[in-house]
Length: 80
Image 1 (tube, helix red, strand yellow):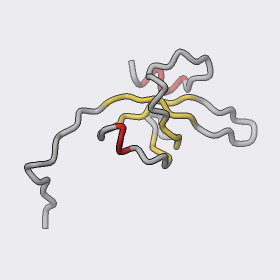
Image 2: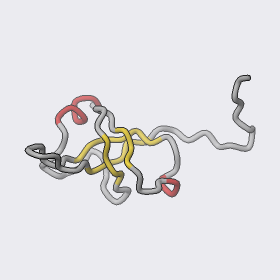
Image 3: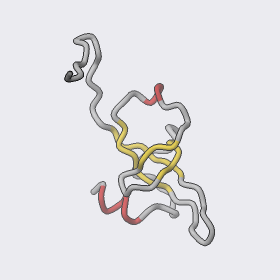
Image 4: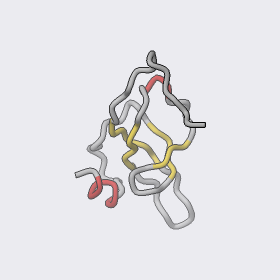
């Protein structure tokens, strides 16, 4: 049976937000881009899939593109 969206559900346009990955071994923590399809008030602190495919925690206080220097080069390229 197909899933339907109730008419009262607002459609949210995708927004790019910044997310911080964790450092793993020799890999440094980087800022990534996440395409968010829901309001930021619904972000619960769980890891999200980034544009480049990594998992990272969204920081709604950090804009994308971020002015930080430790940014994922793949996310920068994919969000241009």
